[in-house]
Length: 457
Ligand SMILES: Cc1ncc(COP(=O)(O)O)c(C=O)c1O
Image 1 (spheres, rainbow, N blue to C red):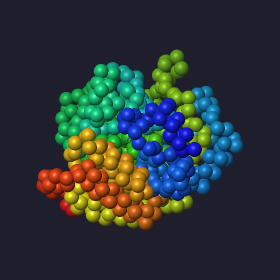
Image 2: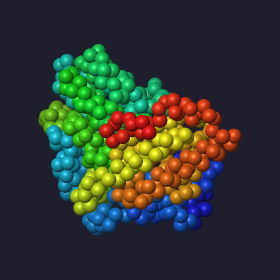
Image 3: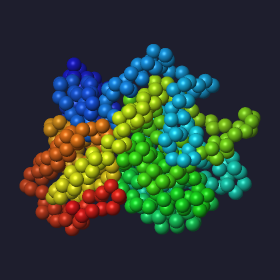
Image 4: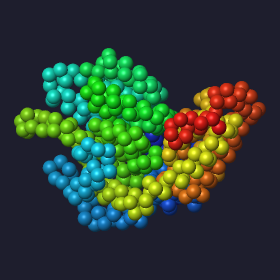
């Protein structure tokens, strides 16, 4: 069965973010089912889902509450459009999201991926200022952060800052200004120069995920909000990765009591069950779109599967599980355990730096020849030992479901450490160059703690 899957895959599929030439040379893991925080392959092997199936899963797979909610909805209707109609799961979920979101966010616009959630925030911000008219119509630019990532559609790529992913598309992108993350002075200067032309500042609050699990210093987000306010610029917080408990609070913005003008949600919204995303905004922005139909102040945007009822039912059930299982309370000791385990990892000679916050961690193996594919080697070694992890270049990302047991969390980190050692040994058969260990030591191997500060290992 799995041979057939592999053969069809190699013949017909094209995988995301994947060099297919290398892909077809490897035996793929064919996932057949899942249980709790484990993925189970067609050959019966079990793996800890160390990436939460691409940063989505929170409460574990096949959670009975969410499974039941989807089945119940399936008995009613699987899909009905939000264009010209409404339905209870979409309305109920919107009310629940507004209830838990930072203050002032009162309106919910659904879509189906993190990329579209960002596109929507960008288009809304742009159109909002155009419709304000007068000098505000000049606000057509966006400011993003270096190493920022907001998805792969053209608008999201335009405000992104990862050259490897975004550079090739430069001629297709709309102009934006990029400032180094974590440096309020750089943003202050950009707004000083371009504030009156800027529609919005776009940030991943506290932790920039795809950029390499980069942690911003404490107080940065607060300063970003203050600077946006001072220049009457809208703030878009992309919590597609950080939302739903990932950093230890429901939303990362809460750590600094910041309320953005737009909050982009995806991934964990449905516990990773179904493609659903949401862009939340304020009544102020919403009212900027009100008028007579013939005024054409409508937000002309919508996707076929916007607000899909099955997905909304899964999302409501996921929020129920947060309450039923006190997920945010129960995650705290696990975060402390992960911090302790990561402090150990940061002492390894093979490790340059450990970054992260809450249940997001990046283990940076430092500069290596890309041809060695060290990060990839680590994922293969981890697979042999029973865990699925994924690299961002030579940074190994650990992003387990919040529901993971302490035992499995410790096992995941142990597997990762063993895999880093084994992969480094295999990549450097003559021994890891001494200069690399020394380089790491010289750079003051550090682990970023829960407060965003770095503490020496
Ligand atoms: C912060 C952030 N924004 C947006 C996205 C894009 O989400 P999607 O892949 O669902 O389009 C991601 C995906 O990793 C993300 O991490």
